[in-house]
Image 1 (spheres, rainbow, N blue to C red):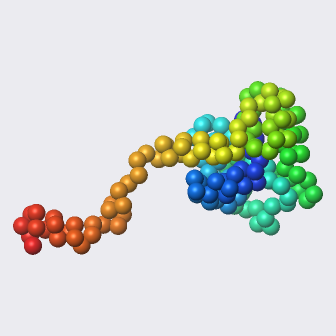
Image 2 (image 1 turned 180 degrees about the vertical axis):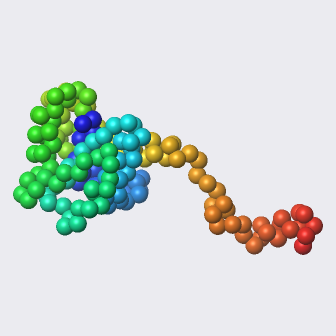
Length: 158
């Protein structure tokens, strides 16, 4: 599992850096990370604190990323530390978190640590590059009345 992601830590980082990132919810986060993993030819696991929402169906429809809820009274940090310890090749593992405790555990295992805000920046850059240049707004919304009059005049149709 190449990406091991502290879900609420990443969400908190996105909300904290509101002016730089578009806000997302937990399903949007996992969906975006899934697109990134698919683009990278990888997979990952996002671990959230607590038991999660009652309806977990939206998470089950997402590929490339396994979603884990730590459970009642269990912190995601504990689950992440256990996953790091169980990993057979931690040097190939990317641990995404800004939590000092998680980062220390990952460094101790020789896993690669990526801070949450840095990871989200990488994800967005990769996905934006993949989508290509942005379409001009006129393509979807049409030309303005002033532009129409200008073109009609240009072609002598006014």
